[in-house]
Length: 502
Image (cartoon, rainbow, N blue to C red; front, side):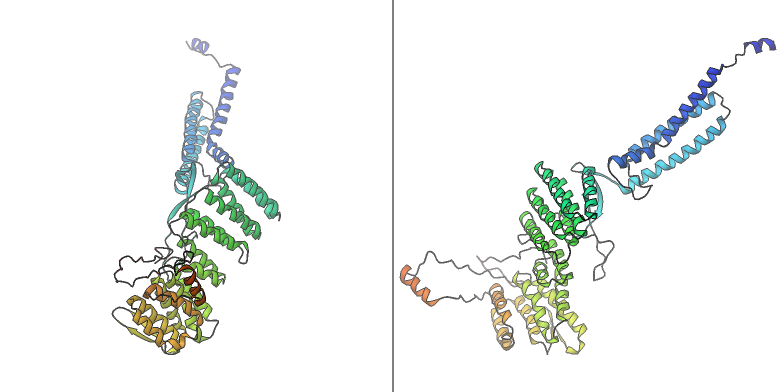
């Protein structure tokens, strides 16, 4: 019986044995390929989309791709374990343990990539492009900074398109030329490529290329080339009818910060920014946030005259920057000239109808003055409606405070009395004469005396019968009403150039 059993047992041929091992080798190779598929897909994804990962774990591949690779690996692992166990390979137990350990490793790898994908990327699209999140406030990255008053800034989240692979390659080539000092060649090639994008109406690509290229040139010290690209960028903004939203403003302000302090093309770029924002925004005099940031940058660079023009049309935060700049300037002069520097902040705000900013600027200026010079003997006078500081040694500074109170009352008699009382001191500052005439007309209805020529008036009366059709028509002055007063019928109240700056 034993002999019959032994006769019925057929031993596998060498070819069958070789086939099993060859099949096992191919299966193991395919299993290894699937095991490394997430890594390979990450490499390919980075290469195709020109993504440079800051660390080996930041693969930045879609979670769906990773999950597909992981699923393929587990399926092949199960087939491989079953194949090894079915054919009773001598290393079946070791292979099974190895496959299980590798499966655990790949599973952890997949979970890490999926977690990174969920945390680091935003699955939203604008204009067909994947977007990421950046924090922007007035076009400036805050990086955890705090305001001077100690209150932390809160920055809204906005989406900025990720640069395409084609533009990245162009910029990489131009960056190499810029690093070699070949600014002109890089400048011309960037202009040429941007022109192609503009002709094909690919404004977004042109804007991305020009802004990034200009940044590279400006940071490398090629101010004139960078300024030229910035000016062209403004032209494309206008051609594409871009609105002054946060992202578009942030791009321009980032470039403005990259300018060298004394670059001649900077003012032309600033003029283009203001023109674009006034044309495509809701503020005829330009966007207040842009004015605020531009004015702040000029103040930091010591360009006080340019800073004054922009801070006058800025936001509610501009008054603090304005007052601080004027006081810093005042500290380089004689102590008795405080009123002259305070007036440089008060008068511009009054002339654009922003009385709140004028009061704030004067208050901040006098607060620093009282703190820095306690020997001035300041006297504080309080009333139910307002407070005022009186400086016995600085009469014109007192005049500014009383002028703001008179504007609140809206009484022309009070204004005339105030001018008469301080008439001797006002004669010493002839530069105040024109602003005071404008303020008298705007807030108190006192018309500015016309500068007429008696001889020309007589000739006009004789030749034209007193009705010269070619004479310029006089514009009726518009009066800014005091707070709480009724608006007269038929009279228009002029609005500040930038509504909402208060």
